[in-house]
Length: 226
Image (cartoon, rainbow, N blue to C red; front, side, top):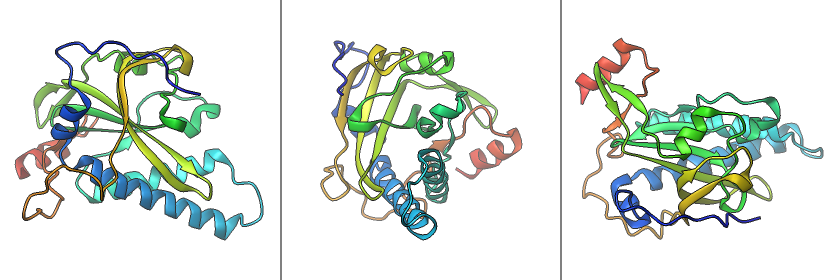
């Protein structure tokens, strides 16, 4: 299974290298968060279901909850993807957050393959690079670009790899989806993105912003704290 439909990159959208620069420390934090989430998923499976098959819905739910918890602790306002899902799609339900006017969704994508959108119009718009509206305090904003981070389990519920994709067009099935590019994210130890000499307490992610669904008072407080 491979994503064979790659479209020519328009001049107003970023290359993979430009995306890495704009995302700054986010890939590093994502690797840490998702590795931690995978480890906790494996711990639960080994403790509760050591000799029996582990339900994929349960595994994905634990992984997603633990990843959100870790990311939130590191200053990323991550939350469950707002798209509507049926039960059979639950393992592919995602995580969503904003960073520097970039909307990032984290989805399960075996072998770096973008999942289909099903019947979700919201997800199709996201794949089609339609900007997302959100708020910083009371100030209306909208995203400049939409990215998808793809992950999958290796045997033993170990995090396999992470891929970063710039989606181009949504479709109901994975075969109907296209992207401008999809590249494996460099592992933390391999990344060439320079780190600042001194990291602030929130790992340099103070520019992470809250989505439109935030309560206004909470969002206002976060904005004033920056």
